[in-house]
Image (cartoon, rainbow, N blue to C red; front, side):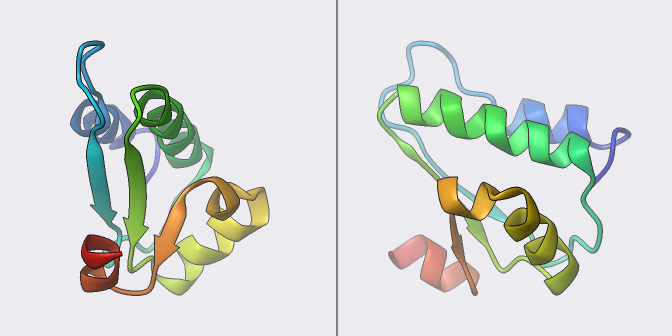
Length: 90
């Protein structure tokens, strides 16, 4: 997840201003790398979704991605779950 793919991710996570209480789960089980571009996309999405009264969850981050999320503290804002099923049922 770098600057090349982040525009697509941002578009997928974008919500319209009139969206009420969006609920988004991002499955990162196949993501092996995330740089600051991915962090920015998730932080922006978190703020949009939170403002709209909804939630954003991250599911199954791989160890390298979980490390980055923890390093920058994004895992304190966005709920991270070990599996997709956990993220969907929490």
